Image (cartoon, rainbow, N blue to C red):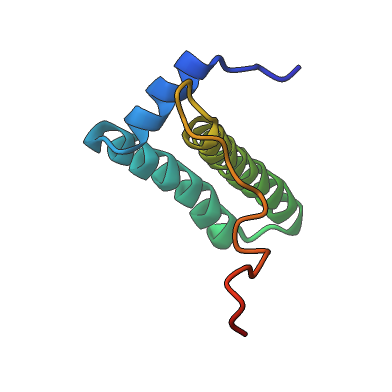
Length: 101
């Protein structure tokens, strides 16, 4: 199940990205992932190394997936045309009509 954000949700999320609060939250999340990596490096028993590796990988995957989703949602918000925006000319720059080469 994929949670779909509204454009208003994306606007709030985009605004949140530039706050000190988000930077603090991001630092906390990275710190927690780092703890899993440290536990992996400190593990000595082979079977526990595998468990620690799986946990570290899951934590890193969760963090990266969340950051990727946040960035994707912010990108959608920032690049969605708004009412009143000029139409985008997709041929601009593709045609050389001034006669110079």
